[in-house]
Image 1: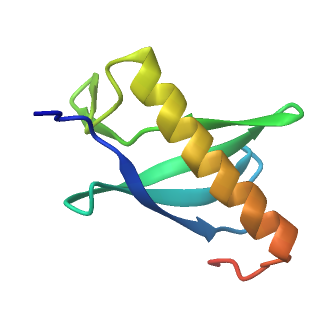
Image 2: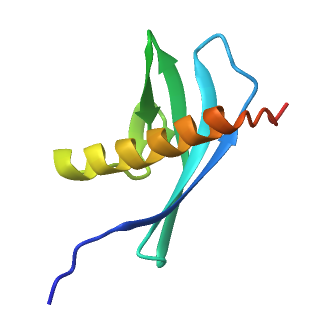
Length: 97
């Protein structure tokens, strides 16, 4: 039995670009069974990077979730950035204010 997690859906919500480079928020659905959201997409130089949500408790910061393996991180990044590029290609410009 194979228990491999597959990305079944990616949703992107563009935001008004910020000085810190934030351009969108992503939600990723795995196997149609688990959704993880609040994945920030930041412009970095000529590319983009993802940032996973953190919880700050006192002086400590804890990831709410994040990929553990390089393979998982690369798969999520590729799926999210491919969908973001697709939105840019379609000219979708609705943004949250």
